[in-house]
Amino acid sequence: MSRISREEVEHIARLAELEFSEEEKEKLAVQLNQILEHAGRISQLDIKDVPPTSHVLPLTNVFREDEPRPSLSLEEVLANAAEVLDNCFLVPQILEEG
Amino acid sequence: MELWDMKGHQLAEMIEKKEVSVSEVTRSVLDRIRSLEPLLNCYITVLEEESQTLARQIDKYIAQEGHPAPLTGLPMAVKDLICTRGVRTTCGSRILDNYLPVYDATVIQKLKDQRYLPVGKANMDEFAMGSSTENSYYGPTRNPWNTERVPGGSSGGSAAAVAAGEAIVALGSDTGGSIRQPASLCGVVGLKPTYGLVSRYGLVAFASSLDQIGPITRDVQDAAIFLNAIAGHDVMDSTSVKREIPDYTKALVDDVRGLKIGVPQELMVEGVEMKVRDSVNQAIELLVSLGAFCEETSLPYLEHSLSAYYIIAPAEASANLARYDGVKYGHRARGSRNIREMYKKTRSEGFGAEVKRRIMLGTYALSAGYYEAYYGQAQKVRTLIVNDFRQAFQKYDVLVSPTSPTVAFKIGEKVDNPLQMYLSDVCTIPVNLAGIPAISVPCGTSDGLPIGLQIIGRAFDEETILRVAYTFEQYFGFNQSPPLTNPGVQLTEDQKSQVQMSGEGRRR
Image (cartoon, rainbow over the protein chains, first blue to last red):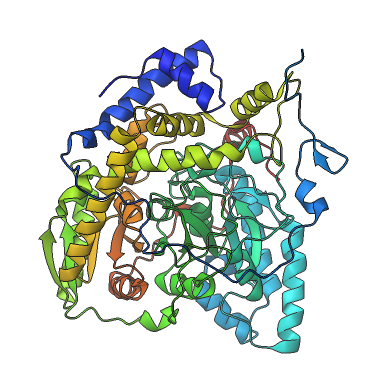
């Protein structure tokens, strides 16, 4: 199995919306490699024809009647938000200027 | 005997006969919390006022209406990742430090129907990721059997509270062993139900195909009573299964004659301590002497469980935890110029080291170029593990193993070595991957630290594992209590300052 480089740590951090100090990146690369070395052992098993299991229950497409039910009030939905303006979630700038 | 030291069903009987009031039981447990909490740190939030008010209301109800339900008025610890309306639910994380759920989890709703009595929200590893309760923003919980040691995890606060008399019963959750392993390390009973038996609605998600809620109790009878209260289909959780729920207390029959027990050699692994192995072997001999048939067996793919789990669980977690972005709820970092920066800062400040590690691991396993080699392969291994169990259960009624390969380890011993920490769940993880039920019951001690026996059953056959656990408990008679059970226990100033200094989060 390939080893995770520091550059790769940075790439994954970008995907996961996380940031790390240089020291943390070094440590993470070492730890992730240790874990993947153990977990990666399964990649050597010759099991290409085995079907995957994503879920143990034999359930597919659970349907229910399309009946209206009460939902949370606007007040409740906004109750835990960091910032609210005019009954909306307020966030920092989304689009770049110019 | 002190009220806080009694089993739930004993107290329920006394409450029913009006020999004791719910207020008295609650006071006894709250006193216990007041004296021990500075040392053990079982709770993130203690509901001191609320629980006393509720206790008075319940007493009034019983006086007027009679007939309390089996869990009515029993002081309960609720793991802090189960949503409780209006009571903060932190998941042991800074990112949810201020989170006040606007709805109750289905299990909480069901418990409210029984007039349960929550005394607090129990400490846990952040987002249930850990095996020691050291990964909590609110500081580690200590093991009541030896306060230098961990209580196990991630439901360590729940298990330690039940063991120490800071709760009579507790709710936990189990993704890879988080109910059973701390129950084992704290000398109490922990049951992980079949995936789909208990609704996950309102359980903050870690790995959705593995998570289950279950009870942590002082004996098997309490576990059966508790399961009766929380099992059943829920329209709010499409993965909860529609089926007839039996009365689990009817399974509490002290008889294992003719029962076939398999002992998977893959779970008696190298890392299992000698004393743990001996205790489990003695437990097996006891069951054989009671008329069970028992033999060693092999489930060859179980040895790959840990590998598959540490791909699948972080992969699911990385997707589930994407929701913590500082917008709808939870912590938001200040002073960001744009939204991407806010996401990054919020998540980096809000999550602890282990949670970040698992998000990184899961993101990597799901990323382009590695998906098939890791995630795809792990899902195939999962199929083989499911098949191994299916075959074993054609021959055996239950399988037994140690719950944890070791007794409680020292606080700090494994925090810098994630892989070593992960190995403490080596015996419990296969059960979650297969979605089947298992229970841990105390089966001995080693140097004053409890050892747990794991009994694994067929999907939706909680009755048989309860029966075996109950029978074992009747004859083994584990009646030791942690040394802290001395009611006059006094903390040294040194012990108090230790706890106050650890953990950044505000306990309430």
